[in-house]
Image (cartoon, rainbow, N blue to C red):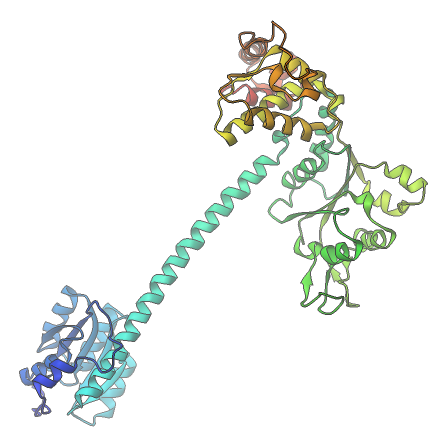
Length: 501
């Protein structure tokens, strides 16, 4: 039995009316407070002091208090130091074990420092209150304790929300990375013509190496797509792929963009900046339009290729970087070297492996497949349901010169779909004048009507031949051989034809 002590005089009316000192109340939603003392008068006095600021529960023993604690949502416990049976220190230690977040206050009428220290150390007591207490001081202590509890709960909530957000972001990043890898894999490059088959052969061999690659070809042929396929089909695919058009910036800015700079190295350099070579460490840097670079830039690029070192603007320090370089140009670099506009040593460093991307006019067999691919993508983008092309429209697409190459074809199909209205198929008169060869107001040829469906018939024939070959041979490799095409071309054709595995 704890030693009896008289409770401090409390004016009940004043205690009820004052609630918490100040205007900043603890919370509009009352938190649970458990009061534990073997003297009913003390419990009554405490309850009258705190009841307007919180939801109060009482108990006279540690065992009874634990039962209440387990049944209710308790934010704060105020316990006497001495209780019958279980001591106050043991009770608070058990409270900490069951819920470490609960704030614990010890009420004591004794100068028993050892018991107080035990409660502080083992029960992790927030503070202790001496008997007799001052009502205002008690309210302030409790208010601070509940504020601490609320802040801790909010921090836990935010930490949990942040953890969930990070998990979701990691999952989304993984999904996007896989989507990007799929989008830029070899299978995503459309073409089964002999010219593209030669490109695929080189890609398959070079992707798994770290060899520097020079991609050549006219504007719009898809050189960056080839560069990305090299990166995302190789061992560096988990690391960054960064691209920079060397003709898009003045040389000083290009130097800063690629190599970085120190603060104050030039007007406008207000802070240090890392260059793309450093940001892409262990990844791939794609230098588009490499033929547009000047002599000074060519020297610095040569050092990266030879030594694997970069030097940011405004500093004499060099940094080692591990990057794979893929460069691209629509110029004849051999001719640029002969005429003194491009360094010969850099040219040969860049052209360890050269991949020439053929112009669309050199791979007309791929135009129908490309046109259907761009049509499907434009349908999805614009919410259309255009089924295909009339024979006449496809003939015009195949016959067109396409000086802008694949990019021009894609733009043409996207324009057609945007202006198609409720058309079911793309007809000749829906094409641009320079593609269709028709003048405004001219009617399409009688045979060029949506009823003609040669493309669909050809696709159906392809499906039948592929199925027969697969049934006869038992696998794709032998089926492709029997059909007279590479296995990769067969896979792409089956994908376009939406044939199930």
